[in-house]
Length: 206
Image (cartoon, rainbow, N blue to C red; front, side):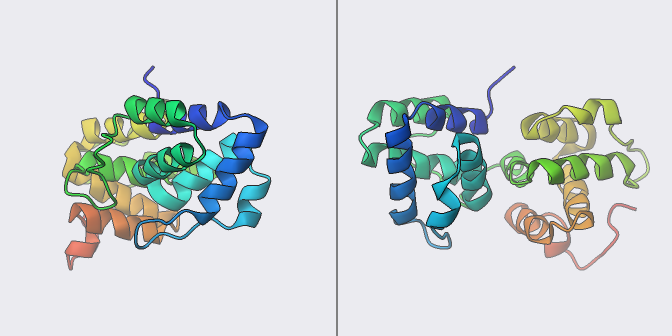
């Protein structure tokens, strides 16, 4: 099974010794970020283990930018080899063509980014609601057994395979709103220009 972006980020952080992990957190709290992003508070970072730190970075910065930030912080604490490996493994060009809302991101990228930003409990809620939601004629709900163990990448691909890109985004947006992830739903609609943020009609799915 292919490793996800989160897997590679976690692997990089898990490879830091105790002292270097402490340095990483300290630098992460101080680093200058792209406009629209805030540093994660020191109190939140202090006791975070690599798994919690990975999840917090993805939650705060989305997958793509979280990796870019991690790479910069790793270089700043002289962990250049880990930074290079992280960049290579996640296929992020060192030239850095990616940023939030970049034109280089596809509809699939934006859908994956939205799902990857869900915590474990909310991802479970998303799958449960996705299995129950009322769809347009001609579409079927994805079976619960298929959804149960799917990670965000598998879930994204399954949704696109089942509903095609445009309708997959509309479905995802409605499910996100149903589980009170309004901000994620709005961002997904805006970034993809699909859904209620770019349409005056409600109830597109029915």
